[in-house]
Image 1 (cartoon, rainbow, N blue to C red):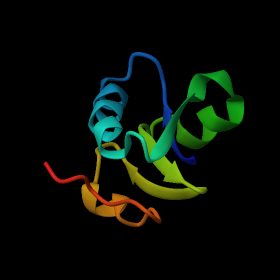
Image 2: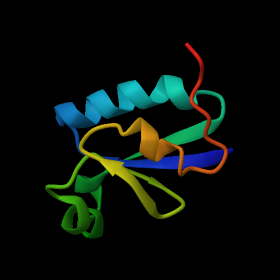
Image 3: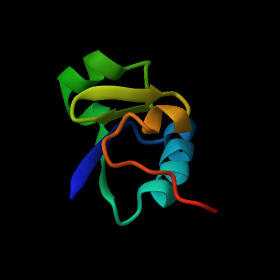
Length: 82
């Protein structure tokens, strides 16, 4: 299954919101891997005040807030009909 990476940290309200919004959009089609930036110095240095960050295959998709239009840059992403 293809992976979408989210860079976040514990206690980050924006991170919690973006994960909550993203999960139903990708459930069953992509795996979500949440990386706590405070567990690695290189992540902390790269993302310290930039979180949350959503990446796919090393490419920045969006940060701070979920950008549904930007998600369409992910190959195979189709927004579910509600």
